[in-house]
Length: 355
Picture (cartoon, helix red, strand yellow):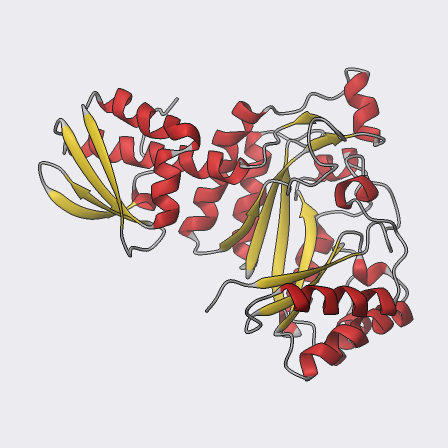
């Protein structure tokens, strides 16, 4: 299938019953809180005019808590999206919401308007983290709403944040492992960012909260990715998308942020897997050739080819040639003393430290 063309409809803070400590949706999305059915139609038409190919289009209602909006307003917005789906201009409709804003009446209404994917902003399944983040619900409701969403035939998406108040490595890993048990269609992983005009920013300035930096976060997120990769769960985003406001020169005060954050994590993941493979197999000679997908060639090379050079240095080899080939994102073909195709998921967790 061709690459998905997404039409984003932002509903920042619309429907949210409380303020999570990390959240300022207006700054995160760069949009206001007011939206109407005419705004939705205008946005859809505008994006459809941009797309060269129109065979894989998704309307996505981002931000806020869509299903916490008054159900009549939900229907007005969804009716527009559904009309484009009914005439074949749109393939799927996606929305994001809170775990405690799901019930039978809401899901029946979403079915009526042909919604396909419901993403829950879970963030964590640890009770202390949920409380300190002012989420306004416990973990039990996540399991209940996830089950109900799947029973109604929707695709379930789950969103995880690391580095929230009270969070630690073990809690983040446990949340990922519990996500796998819920068997979602997709997940997103976000390191916590300190954003201006949020309660978390106040706590950060007062010394009550310490954020993860870029280097600290990468191995943690890589370990979480490994859990999802091995469960064959699609990770559709890693790191908050850079926007005009989401960068360190504007509204990001602190945290693990970089426009190429996912590549940093995936480069770490693939480097660790490769080094583990070579050290365990002893399949090392002075010059090594690796074939991989275009994505993995980029990840092996890394930003400014630093990742590739680190591999060369750690293995103490003279040359590493990278060749793009038609392999899956987990397959790497090695040409060294012996030639073989490996699955990087088999080697990431080996007991060899990658710094």
